[in-house]
Amino acid sequence: MKKIKLADEDKFFDNVLNRKLKNKVFKDAYEAEGLRLQLAHELYEARRKRHISQKKLADKLKMPQQQISRIEMGNQNITLDTLSRITSALNVRADVKLKLL
Image 1 (tube, rainbow, N blue to C red):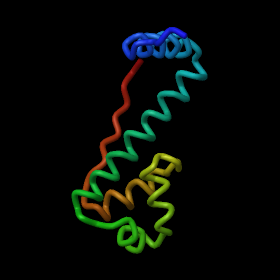
Image 2: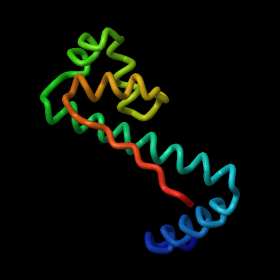
Image 3: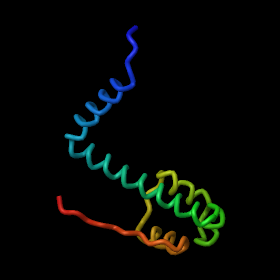
Image 4: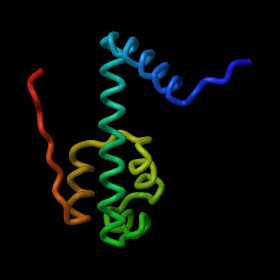
């Protein structure tokens, strides 16, 4: 069996992804997932930099710690209201920008 070099695997993945991104439904879902994961990471980093545990943040927001975990893992969609509550509790600001395509 021929071994595939990592660079070849990357090229293969990029080719498959680029082909899939031509499908509007897939592209929309892919971009939405990317935004959700980016937001999740930024919320996690903000909480970590404030030295606040998930439990302490959850208590402050009157929500289960598991919900904070799901949000930070990107496993839960959140409303703008929830985002606003979390950013307020962490004393950070969220910027939402729209760009014309």
